[in-house]
Length: 203
Image (tube, rainbow, N blue to C red; front, side, top):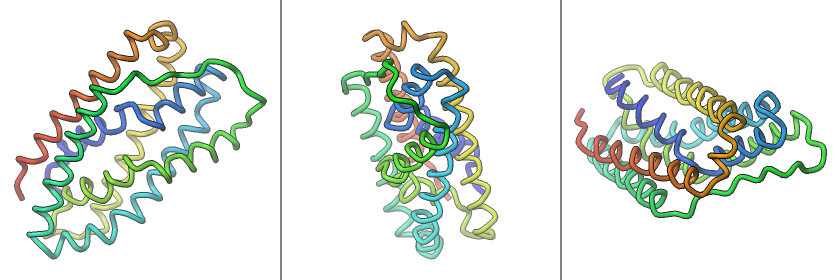
């Protein structure tokens, strides 16, 4: 499995970057507390596993057999990360709703987050265009696939838990325009950097 540490950094940057999943986690934490946001975090993580299984398996096998396909998808994936970064840098800060809504159970938050992740284009495109490039074509595919997918899912849980716990402590900052703008700038800059790094990797 090549460039594992680069995969770890790219995946972490993708998960950290504000999107539907991060917004949902922070919103749940502000509404119900960090502990009660965990059901949604598990839903997002399971959604990532399902998206990976559907999106990356077939595409990864194609890339394993074709150097040209690998090169094309490498640059598409790098361009997509840069696009996400620039878009995030320039976008209006996300708004996190603090208002409590009708009673919501852990199961309901889990299903809501799972549904959100299954329809999240950022996750789908990551597993189609970025993920397969870190597979070593000369080694067994299945073992690498599961190692990278589990790594990504663990990152989802760890990073979203960090967001949930930070939301309560940094509530005033996260709900301020300046704080939300800073989150966009940091996430956008990381994605652009790792998009450029991805474009220069070789196998």
